[in-house]
Amino acid sequence: LSCQQKPRDQNVSIKEPIEWSRTWVPATDKHDLPRVLVIGDSHVERYYPLVAKQLEGTANCAKLTTSMSLGDPVLLEEIELILRQYDFSIISFNNGLHGKGYMEVQYGKYIPLVFDLFKKHSKAKVIWVNTTPVRKKENLTEFDDFTMRVRERNRLANEYVVAHGIPTLDLFSLGEQHVDYYTGDGVHFNPQAVAAEADRVTQKIREMLK
Image (cartoon, rainbow, N blue to C red; front, side, top):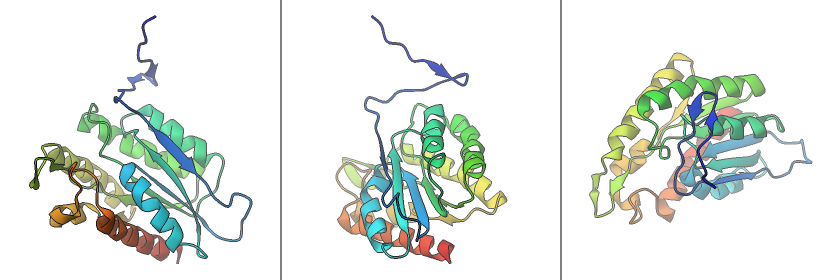
Protein backbone atom coordinates (compact mmCIF):
# COMPACT_ATOMS: atom_id res chain seq x y z
CA LEU A 1 0.00 0.00 0.00
CA SER A 2 1.24 3.48 -0.79
CA CYS A 3 1.20 6.21 1.84
CA GLN A 4 0.33 9.70 0.62
CA GLN A 5 0.23 13.01 2.43
CA LYS A 6 -3.29 14.07 3.24
CA PRO A 7 -4.34 17.68 2.55
CA ARG A 8 -5.50 19.55 5.65
CA ASP A 9 -7.52 22.75 5.45
CA GLN A 10 -6.70 22.91 1.74
CA ASN A 11 -2.99 22.77 2.57
CA VAL A 12 -0.58 19.87 2.35
CA SER A 13 1.40 19.12 5.49
CA ILE A 14 4.98 18.89 4.24
CA LYS A 15 6.67 16.07 6.11
CA GLU A 16 10.18 16.05 7.55
CA PRO A 17 12.20 12.80 7.82
CA ILE A 18 11.41 12.68 11.54
CA GLU A 19 8.56 14.48 13.24
CA TRP A 20 8.08 14.77 16.97
CA SER A 21 5.98 16.47 19.62
CA ARG A 22 6.30 16.53 23.41
CA THR A 23 3.77 17.95 25.86
CA TRP A 24 4.42 18.25 29.58
CA VAL A 25 1.99 19.91 31.98
CA PRO A 26 2.96 19.64 35.66
CA ALA A 27 0.85 20.38 38.74
CA THR A 28 -2.42 19.98 36.86
CA ASP A 29 -4.24 19.41 40.17
CA LYS A 30 -2.99 22.69 41.65
CA HIS A 31 -4.34 26.17 41.05
CA ASP A 32 -2.44 28.29 43.56
CA LEU A 33 0.10 29.63 41.03
CA PRO A 34 -0.11 31.10 37.54
CA ARG A 35 0.41 28.61 34.73
CA VAL A 36 2.94 29.31 31.98
CA LEU A 37 3.28 27.58 28.60
CA VAL A 38 6.45 27.63 26.52
CA ILE A 39 6.03 26.52 22.90
CA GLY A 40 8.87 25.88 20.47
CA ASP A 41 11.34 23.48 18.94
CA SER A 42 14.44 21.68 20.24
CA HIS A 43 15.90 24.95 21.57
CA VAL A 44 12.88 25.22 23.85
CA GLU A 45 13.12 21.53 24.67
CA ARG A 46 16.65 22.16 25.98
CA TYR A 47 16.01 25.30 28.01
CA TYR A 48 12.58 24.32 29.35
CA PRO A 49 13.86 22.42 32.43
CA LEU A 50 15.93 25.43 33.48
CA VAL A 51 13.03 27.85 33.01
CA ALA A 52 10.67 25.58 34.93
CA LYS A 53 13.20 25.30 37.76
CA GLN A 54 13.74 29.05 37.94
CA LEU A 55 9.99 29.67 38.05
CA GLU A 56 9.37 27.25 40.93
CA GLY A 57 7.29 28.97 43.59
CA THR A 58 6.28 31.68 41.11
CA ALA A 59 4.52 29.77 38.33
CA ASN A 60 3.89 26.25 37.10
CA CYS A 61 5.61 25.94 33.74
CA ALA A 62 4.34 23.61 30.97
CA LYS A 63 5.80 22.94 27.54
CA LEU A 64 4.72 22.05 24.03
CA THR A 65 7.81 21.29 21.97
CA THR A 66 7.36 20.19 18.39
CA SER A 67 8.96 19.90 14.98
CA MET A 68 5.89 21.46 13.35
CA SER A 69 6.35 24.81 11.65
CA LEU A 70 4.18 27.79 10.93
CA GLY A 71 2.74 26.95 7.54
CA ASP A 72 1.72 23.49 8.75
CA PRO A 73 -1.93 23.16 9.89
CA VAL A 74 -0.84 20.39 12.27
CA LEU A 75 0.92 23.00 14.44
CA LEU A 76 -2.38 24.78 15.00
CA GLU A 77 -4.03 21.48 15.91
CA GLU A 78 -1.33 20.68 18.47
CA ILE A 79 -1.58 24.11 20.08
CA GLU A 80 -5.37 24.07 20.14
CA LEU A 81 -5.40 20.69 21.87
CA ILE A 82 -3.45 21.96 24.89
CA LEU A 83 -5.22 25.34 25.03
CA ARG A 84 -8.59 23.61 25.21
CA GLN A 85 -7.50 21.70 28.30
CA TYR A 86 -5.63 24.26 30.41
CA ASP A 87 -5.68 27.95 31.23
CA PHE A 88 -2.41 29.86 31.01
CA SER A 89 -1.36 33.29 32.24
CA ILE A 90 1.68 33.54 29.93
CA ILE A 91 2.47 31.87 26.61
CA SER A 92 6.02 32.09 25.25
CA PHE A 93 6.05 31.16 21.55
CA ASN A 94 9.07 30.37 19.36
CA ASN A 95 9.03 28.94 15.83
CA GLY A 96 11.14 29.10 12.70
CA LEU A 97 13.94 26.53 12.49
CA HIS A 98 11.75 23.71 11.14
CA GLY A 99 9.57 23.61 8.06
CA LYS A 100 12.14 24.37 5.39
CA GLY A 101 9.64 23.07 2.85
CA TYR A 102 7.35 26.01 3.61
CA MET A 103 8.30 29.19 1.82
CA GLU A 104 8.28 32.40 3.80
CA VAL A 105 5.02 33.54 2.23
CA GLN A 106 3.35 30.41 3.67
CA TYR A 107 5.09 30.94 7.01
CA GLY A 108 3.88 34.53 7.10
CA LYS A 109 0.27 33.62 6.40
CA TYR A 110 0.20 31.46 9.51
CA ILE A 111 1.50 34.14 11.88
CA PRO A 112 -1.91 35.83 12.38
CA LEU A 113 -3.59 32.41 12.49
CA VAL A 114 -1.58 31.20 15.47
CA PHE A 115 -1.98 34.46 17.40
CA ASP A 116 -5.71 34.43 16.69
CA LEU A 117 -5.75 30.89 18.08
CA PHE A 118 -4.12 32.11 21.29
CA LYS A 119 -6.80 34.79 21.66
CA LYS A 120 -9.63 32.38 20.87
CA HIS A 121 -8.76 29.85 23.54
CA SER A 122 -6.81 31.82 26.13
CA LYS A 123 -6.59 35.13 27.96
CA ALA A 124 -2.84 34.65 28.33
CA LYS A 125 -0.29 37.35 27.65
CA VAL A 126 1.82 36.17 24.71
CA ILE A 127 5.57 36.63 24.16
CA TRP A 128 7.08 36.14 20.71
CA VAL A 129 10.57 34.61 20.98
CA ASN A 130 12.45 35.14 17.73
CA THR A 131 14.39 32.40 15.97
CA THR A 132 18.13 31.83 16.34
CA PRO A 133 20.49 31.84 13.32
CA VAL A 134 22.00 28.69 11.82
CA ARG A 135 25.74 28.34 11.26
CA LYS A 136 27.68 26.10 8.86
CA LYS A 137 28.69 22.82 10.45
CA GLU A 138 32.01 22.80 8.66
CA ASN A 139 32.79 26.41 9.65
CA LEU A 140 30.85 27.81 12.58
CA THR A 141 32.19 31.30 11.97
CA GLU A 142 29.95 31.50 8.88
CA PHE A 143 26.16 31.56 8.74
CA ASP A 144 24.33 28.84 6.87
CA ASP A 145 22.23 29.92 3.89
CA PHE A 146 19.07 29.12 5.87
CA THR A 147 19.86 32.03 8.18
CA MET A 148 18.67 34.39 5.45
CA ARG A 149 15.31 32.67 5.64
CA VAL A 150 15.36 32.85 9.43
CA ARG A 151 15.90 36.60 9.19
CA GLU A 152 12.90 36.92 6.87
CA ARG A 153 10.74 34.78 9.14
CA ASN A 154 11.74 36.92 12.10
CA ARG A 155 11.00 40.06 10.08
CA LEU A 156 7.51 38.84 9.19
CA ALA A 157 6.75 37.90 12.78
CA ASN A 158 8.17 41.16 14.09
CA GLU A 159 6.02 43.15 11.68
CA TYR A 160 2.92 41.46 13.07
CA VAL A 161 3.74 41.55 16.78
CA VAL A 162 4.80 45.20 16.72
CA ALA A 163 1.54 46.13 15.02
CA HIS A 164 -0.42 44.23 17.69
CA GLY A 165 1.57 45.27 20.75
CA ILE A 166 2.96 41.81 21.44
CA PRO A 167 6.37 41.85 23.17
CA THR A 168 9.39 40.21 21.54
CA LEU A 169 12.22 38.37 23.26
CA ASP A 170 15.37 38.52 21.14
CA LEU A 171 17.36 35.29 21.08
CA PHE A 172 18.59 35.77 17.50
CA SER A 173 21.27 38.15 18.77
CA LEU A 174 22.65 35.45 21.08
CA GLY A 175 23.48 33.24 18.13
CA GLU A 176 24.53 36.16 15.97
CA GLN A 177 27.05 37.53 18.46
CA HIS A 178 28.38 34.30 20.00
CA VAL A 179 29.88 31.70 17.69
CA ASP A 180 31.16 30.00 20.84
CA TYR A 181 27.55 29.23 21.85
CA TYR A 182 27.10 26.62 19.12
CA THR A 183 27.53 22.88 19.12
CA GLY A 184 29.05 21.21 16.06
CA ASP A 185 25.74 20.91 14.20
CA GLY A 186 25.48 24.67 13.74
CA VAL A 187 21.90 24.69 15.03
CA HIS A 188 21.85 23.85 18.73
CA PHE A 189 23.43 25.68 21.63
CA ASN A 190 25.89 24.31 24.18
CA PRO A 191 24.98 24.22 27.90
CA GLN A 192 26.37 27.70 28.54
CA ALA A 193 24.20 29.15 25.79
CA VAL A 194 21.14 27.14 26.82
CA ALA A 195 21.48 28.67 30.29
CA ALA A 196 21.67 32.13 28.72
CA GLU A 197 18.49 31.45 26.76
CA ALA A 198 16.75 30.17 29.88
CA ASP A 199 17.75 33.26 31.86
CA ARG A 200 16.34 35.59 29.22
CA VAL A 201 13.11 33.64 28.89
CA THR A 202 12.62 33.42 32.65
CA GLN A 203 13.29 37.12 33.13
CA LYS A 204 10.75 38.05 30.45
CA ILE A 205 8.12 35.74 31.91
CA ARG A 206 8.66 37.23 35.37
CA GLU A 207 8.23 40.73 33.93
CA MET A 208 5.00 39.71 32.23
CA LEU A 209 3.63 38.06 35.36
CA LYS A 210 4.06 41.34 37.23
